[in-house]
Image (cartoon, helix red, strand yellow):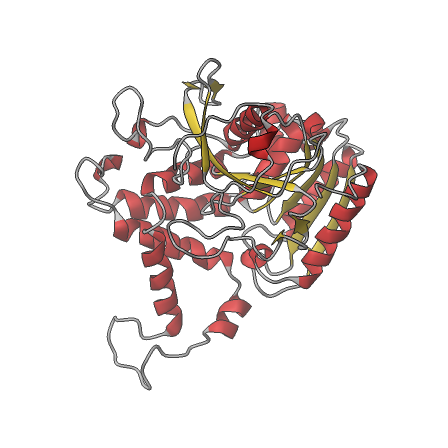
Length: 399
């Protein structure tokens, strides 16, 4: 991706559909990371869709999940596949790009153009590897806020995302309550559970033990820890589905055979599916980025941010006095971020006297339901977004 020279206020450049843009930030004022290190200059890669209106009041920020990126509604430049949220984003859809100016950036620590461990360290010209500083969800959000400043967008009509994207939404509401009119955290939690940290550690260990990892310095050895990253993806992908979804899709069906062969090849369709998920993932994702981003999710704990310790933190305090309108969404079959975790967010918002609505979607599709065709979710989000747009006087949108 080539660097762009767009500056704040140059509306002729940001009022266009512009997938594939990349900017350099933090040259004069570095990004202060939670780990205590100042990062700058750094890159942010982002895509935009739609048109920013005259008073810059119709901007929606979409926050992507762990293995997502900025290519929400355009063909992915690496995989050639359609954008990952085309079910929701586009002309006439729930997030209507005929009405709204939509932005999605690759998180710092990522590997699709934003600064991360695969990016070049400006001091050496070589990939950062494990010399890249550890990052948090709050660091990701602070970088996004710097991107909005660069684009001359003072505040957001809405910030929305699922899974890790939902964590970013919550962080936006806590860190920048005056900059987001509405917030939609989907299938997420206010802190990462011990179970989810455990799953992440299994994936990281798979990468660590791949002999091609070379302690994170695999680029200089001209290798990629393909096997370790593929196994990490396979283990994680299981958590995105539900038992019912796996059974409906695969059951105990055999793969390209009529009877058991009594060997260790992929006997069952579900085995073949997971192997495919792993092998295709390594073609588009960096192993070190996987380590960094999973760690950022593990560190996430909004209550601890407020109280200093997980035990003494006050989640309601993170939203105290917030004027943001919230819509929290969960799914009945999501065991990665179950409804109980989402209800904890709702209780904290109620305790903070925030404006909040909540819906639990009945589905057997598991955690990945937020990416799939879920008509009830679409109706809920459309009603919420339309209501917020009316409250903000955006019925005409960006047309």
